[in-house]
Length: 449
Ligand code: NAP
Image: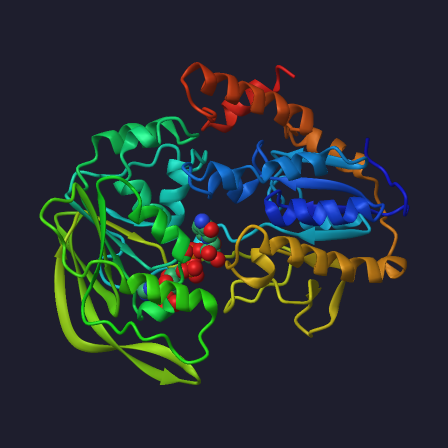
């Protein structure tokens, strides 16, 4: 049922990842009704399609989202793409407030020659592929070279490196996409070189994530090059942990390791070299660190080296995209805002429009970071509640429009049917879940509700 509850106010949220669900939870508990719009038939965003399949404990955060979905006044409007099936303006007319929580779905580029060669990929796409995202289910990766190079040293880079070196048998029972598992079983990759443009104290990953890779049987992690393991004065505890841990790792590869990760700091890719259409090598330049505006930045030394490889994955961050009808800060890749209130180009708040999650603050932070972010955004919304203009349309009118446009909306019952079908398929194969990787298959499963 759509409509209003305790406060007589209703909100729409765009995007059903952690940011969207945490915002829904705060709004429902404050007495609003919530319609959660999601472009795929399945909810949970990056928890389903970003968190690595061998991190099932992290994926269990969906239990909290399931509890939110049971609160009175919640509706999932799955398989509705805002900006395609419904304009943002149409949605805004039907709710007191709209919260943008659609994340950062694209990737950043290196801007070096050869970046578009076959064999050069964005980590965002690679991660979506092994997680069975419908838009990447048919992607193909050539895992036939002995070495892969991953650019960037954040937690996503470690996820990619770990999935590439982990024995595939250890991934078989997870919810990894079958096609990815089959490709990894055939993989000839034995070594992954991770390139960090700055030094150990600027590494973006968490020490525990690296320690998990070090603990993998048959996998060796080596720190290469002339790097400084001094902990900077006043360093955050996480930086200290990283640097002290990195200093304990071997500096020279052993001859016996079955698979290896080489961490090379102070190194930036400058070119990808081709054999025909395909990457055959990556050229990197050694960097030195210089201080600029109170921060360490990498500066090339002119010393260049070539690494033979057939697979380059750039893991240099996600990138937010604009949503038609909403303001956008192109430089920062976010929706401009003040504490979650969306700001128009003249810096005044847009009445009834709010933003949370990665599209509010950029693609950083862990899943839990979105909880505080959503609360702050919803606090602004609640402070404005009495002043919000009443909607001129009813959400039921939107349902009629969607039906006219031939959109097959998936509600929470429909999602549960998909969910049960996926877990049943998984159980039959000894897996946590076997995801549908095509939207039509999800819709067909939901139709059995
Ligand atoms: P990230 O943490 O921002 O790391 C991006 C990395 O790319 C940094 O090492 C950055 O180096 C480097 N980089 C950026 N531009 C570059 C360029 N032009 N050339 C070379 N290197 C470049 O981003 P992420 O790894 O995509 O992760 C996104 C967020 O999700 C993070 O908050 C992360 O912690 C979180 N996450 C957590 C987990 C987990 O807990 N298991 C798993 C995945 C993701 P600089 O520092 O020099 O810019």
